[in-house]
Image (tube, rainbow, N blue to C red; front, side, top):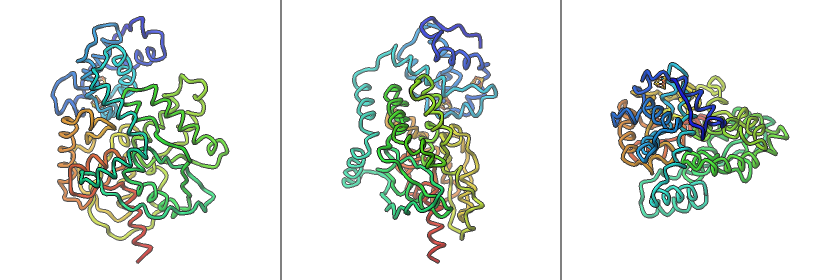
Length: 400
Ligand code: SF4
Ligand code: SF4
């Protein structure tokens, strides 16, 4: 696309990146077919092509209004459009730049600002969020059941990997990292967590508080760095694909920070999704364990380009996988999206659960805590992280 950016951004790093991305888009519209918001709303401005057009106009100095912001807010940042685009348009990077500009140019109303400030303060604080969850469960709110995490094996192997505890995951489902630690222990790898390591920064970054999100990223790098610098861990393992997609981008996200650029690149290079470090062949063949539908989070399949690995691990753990239509579409969770865009998010969840349950699975497996909590809120079918299922299968084998 012919592009002439305005003076306010042309000579900045963001301007150069946005221009290169915009020039790649040929406006063909193939991406509209896989965009969840376009499928629900049917408005071209709620499709990747329409949003690209709005951002191009804004970055070229054209008018920008609350409607521009609304169409960008409605985007899930699921990046299904990137997977579909034949021209390699990096929509996710462009929308980060567009959102930062629109946030500055079109101030939000007081209620919207308050909601976002509250979420940005509350969610990354695990103990505060955990206390609220406990209270919610007491008064009967619809929340995922708290599963006993079980024992975390002592670090006895010479091979060590670092796990991200994260912010909301230890409060909602501490069982996930404990299960990952047991499964890796059985493979001869000790999983350790670094003290003081909190949120990966995705939450605040995607609330469009990009500066605060980058502060969280720097704090996490500081917490991990001593272990990484001493070469004590061979990889950094992500059990939440949302965090994994973000940490793998640290090199890019902190590229303009000379104090952190190199550390960020090193951290990103060490980062692996859990499904990338467990080889199915290394799991013993396990007894039949029932029918499961796998919901592949957008941050796994589109953000990290990982497809088929979890499915192979679940099969190895004895599960039969039921068919899921439109598996490329977002479930509507998308970080805080489900709280900020409840109607759209609810409709996407309804469609996703219909697709997941068409094969009458006994359980639904996922790879991201946000999707897990969001989906569980709409169904009686138990929703678990896939590693909890693999862990259970291994435990059954050991106890039989
Ligand atoms: S983003 Fe890609 S698929 Fe979508 S209109 Fe542009 S070139 Fe076509
Ligand atoms: S990131 Fe997802 S919701 Fe946003 S434009 Fe692309 S496909 Fe649509």
